[in-house]
Length: 245
Ligand SMILES: [Fe+2]
Ligand SMILES: [Fe+2]
Image 1 (tube, helix red, strand yellow):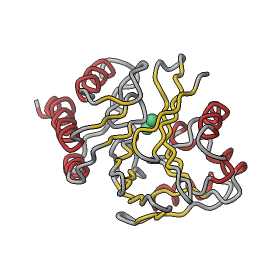
Image 2 (cartoon, protein in one colour):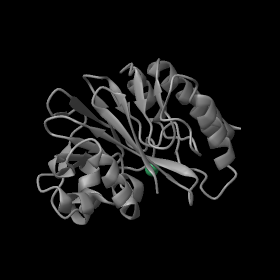
Image 3 (tube, helix red, strand yellow):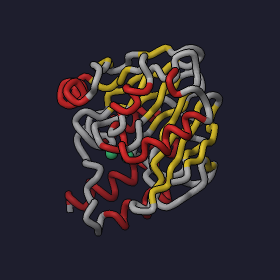
Image 4 (cartoon, helix red, strand yellow):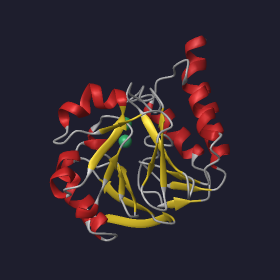
């Protein structure tokens, strides 16, 4: 599998592998700094591809932090491969994630982060935001890199196929098309709509991120607050309104 590496913000590298089996890209994000931070490990079976991508940017043995949103194979399946390779690496996740899954799964104990806690890794600072059930999973959280103001969105703004690494165009339209198409398939209901969904998305929008780092599809540069509010409106229309009717 081919892995492409693109710097989408200063020091923030998108490491992307397209999986023909799934028809989607799996994107990891490497923040190169004194204590390198990897957002998402990729799946176990993609480890060598992801590793080759990381190697294009820095020595993978220098990895210090491994973050992810929620406990799924693409988010953290290869965690133990990274821990074996990088002697000082440690997983960082939500308290729920640590307690429910990662304490048991990981070869070394993770560091559990509280909502709003900051990880200073050098010139970059990663703020952890607990976002239960956004995009999905009780344990879900997102990271916001405060110096470049990049929001790591995990599965939000999901777009299939092989779009470009970074766009300044519309990502909500393609995400809406994907959501409507997916609603008819076996993988429907990937994002639940809870009493907290809208408030969580409005909180993310208030960060006003100029860069949205998207796990599946193009990352976005532009008015991130507007894109997140459009996504919030889309989720309301597509997920909540049909239930009310
Ligand atoms: Fe997911
Ligand atoms: Fe994902």
